[in-house]
Amino acid sequence: MRVFDHPNLANDWKCPVCGLADDKPVTLIAIHGTEDGSIVQAEQFHLDCLEPQYYRGINALIQRW
Ligand SMILES: [Zn+2]
Image (cartoon, rainbow, N blue to C red; front, side, top):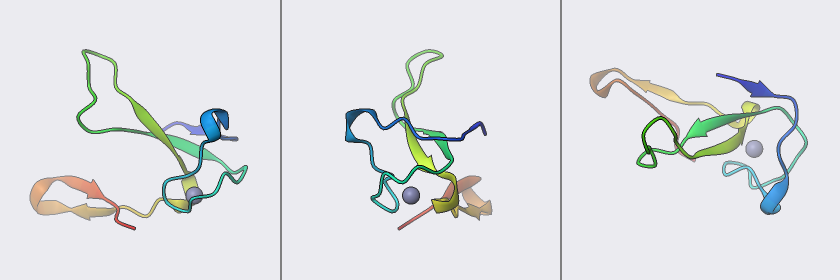
């Protein structure tokens, strides 16, 4: 998981979890269902806003907020 020291604030971006545009490290999370060949859309999230849980039965990481 690649981490960026600062978010890209273009298009009035706000972290989907906290709803803020705070200048903190972010990572990109692929958006399920947007795959097109080797390309996929992604959303920025503050790294410290991510707290996924591992669902062993379905082999998935899920975070709800
Ligand atoms: Zn956040």
